[in-house]
Image (tube, rainbow, N blue to C red):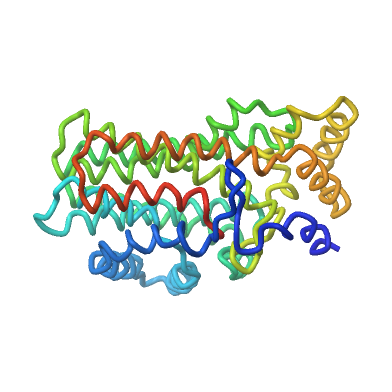
Length: 357
């Protein structure tokens, strides 16, 4: 039933996505190649990031070892680590391995938030694999997430840069505030777009921004250049999360790595639903309010919402909003001279919008 519902919206989007101008872009070509270009740019350092993360997650507690190994083996794009490494390279850092250490730290913060998210959301699937909370329970998952954060802070203290320590510690606080703010507004069909942007700015964009600004700090750039890289990361993160929320309504589960419609069934109001509510008539708005008051939403409810998404072109409009942030992100790097690193980072903005996973 659920797959039949999804087929209504996937037909035009298998392997491609329609842009604002109406053209169709193959997802695995133009967008994903930008991600691969960044990965290839820093591949040797990224391998060392993986090694350091595995080293830092060693524990004499057998359960922690099992849970962290399972979580790491589930894969992931390591996008935040890549942004740290790529930004440091753009900033001219080449003095040692601090970029590797701090990229590992950023990735550990992200991994910890994923473990906590899965408990809060009662998720059963993460990147196509069973979540740690599904296998070992909520309590162990929360504590293991805390363990990841503690190891991250050890790395920061070892690095000794107070500016970066302040930046990453405040970012962890922002992420937690974003999670709570989202919980506070759970089930609100009439959520304001302004509130939604505030939530994703705290939950997602803050860590993107911290990753890119960390790279700038490593390169000892001036204040204006640091803020430019921070702005690049922030707006990239906003575009990434908006596209992620849109993917929840049309991506293929095998590529996306989590249950399709997950946000809807959890009662989360994301941008496609906000756009529906903005454009719907009174009867449709009342329907949306009613289904989000329910403790559980059904496949029939999802089918009705997908019909409204098609009617009001909510996915396309969401991607328009995301494209605005993509452009702001690219423009933020205008302050830097032409270079291979700048070109790759600017092109990466397209990955946040036109990706399939």
